Length: 477
Ligand code: BG6
Image (cartoon, rainbow, N blue to C red; front, side, top):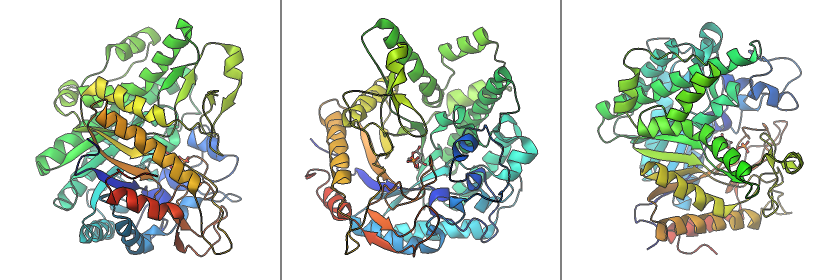
């Protein structure tokens, strides 16, 4: 009973939200560098407003983020003090290939991550590495139109081969694309796709063609990872959290089921190796022409992922009832309000049981090991007069989620490999660009405008999580 002995407890960050140093040591510009704070961020994230360069009058938080590029040793030491077994982080593509289409990589970028992985190794921390956490080289966006272009598959393959080869023996757990299902929605942030200049039907086709290219690239990454080092384990990564029907009206039920399928489309292909019939029907019914090249079908079939990973923050509500649909909550993605659940300051509905529901549903669907690679509470922590943060709300949030994950293991028989809490150190928010939306066990002195000393301070939850790991999840209160 309880968490497996080798359960991978840890925390997660992403390069563009953590590293800063956006133009240091030869790094090229990426789409995620160009997400400003403020009103226009949402439009840029969704691929509605074009922002292909820095513009006056905007603040771009990823440029400096929390300067993890220069402070990773201090941060990894703190993770080690908490007892992390794993650290989920991502490689910035443009540190390795600044433009994206070069054949030779940037040695300084490669060396940087080698140093980071060796630092993890020093403490016995297993890196869990996302190859693309929302980042696409801007050069590829401008020259090739990003993932709508089949050439992206080759560039990405080269990038994958380079990192699998260089980090053989240092990294064995890989995730290919972060929250791959987000590319259909937050298309510029997730895939460097700008579609505003297209009419609706064409924009949809472009997104699905880009999705196909990412799915092919994912299969190639799995293939290469296994060929280069049979020890490698590769996971897909899905933005999780299902739609509950608002009522038992069968129309609400079917509506919610169909909404979930839009998300499962990606993991269905990545885990089962073929396009689900519901998606092929959709293409046929809506006249969406997605081009497959020769060999794609076999490639997808033969190179499915080893495990399923996902982020879990909330559940959503599906309804056809216009009155019910009026009351919404959430920041970047609005959802109908669930009257049974409280919400975070940013309107994200807090639903620990939903994590158990998600685990059961994903395991029933795929029968592959699961990994919870993001979960956490974004809150505006306020230090007391001594600079200390008593984040009992975060402890409560996490304890309740971990309890439900334990039930999924003990009662429902779901194999869970690990849990990496999101934003284990305060970083820039992906959705809002704010620093104020903090998730960490470690406070970072930096505000929304980029002011602050960047000093790191332990919050109350730091010691709490340390104890959780020490007791392998047995003592949560
Ligand atoms: C996930 C992303 O969508 O949610 C992360 O993978 C992101 O990059 C996290 O930071 C939390 O969202 P936000 O908008 O609160 O930062």
